[in-house]
Length: 351
Image (cartoon, rainbow, N blue to C red; front, top):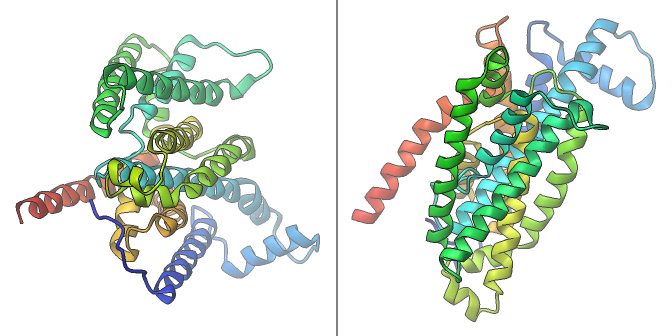
């Protein structure tokens, strides 16, 4: 795992990274809005947004306006929020666990959220007053309960809660919850297709309601992680050294774990299981711009949003009119990168 360099990276280089990432996000946004079964010219897209923002009514096609504002725009925003959430959570977990192969799913939080969602579909129950929001709300609650269980068990096993103990505890809970998930799928009848589709991940047909659900968790979780960026830098050199530098390791560890799990749980709740974003994006950011978490975290937000927007675009256009689950695209992209990271890590250890 690469550690933050003691030398200060050139300010110009870092700002170039922000500029490049912002341009990449803008290009991804424009492509996702304009491309699809119905092509929307870039000029017309800009006119539609201008008219919607300032209330001017130019010569815009009503059908195009509906496609841009009501269908594609909320889908792109949701994909951006999910991608950003998974990426910054992955960056924080990798920094905390000092392992480039760590991602938001290491602690079993994703498995917990998935079990909550599948149980809701399987039992077909609705919480009074929530209606369609029962599924995402139960997913978030299940994710948070899983985090509490993982941390509680890790503390029971080893009071100091070393990173290795937390990782092993997460693997144990992931395996157990995966078994429960498989059991429910095996017992499912008519809901099987809906469950499998949800587990593969998608941001299709999910409007502003889902954006309003994930947005508060994204804002709070991202703020807490960026607030702990300096502490993540210190802990990358080891817990003892971080303690000598004045970092309250136990408290900061809880902050990072809770914030990252909150982001992951909220993302899984609104989009289903989407893997490898939290693994690929932080790794690429560190390779390009260094390992300083003060910059890794915000750059991961920008590039995570861009990556998932583009993956969703590919998912709905590559075999149009059929739409692929976005989780399939991220897995096809992430699995080879996972292998390359593993090979590189092994070579570094041998060298």
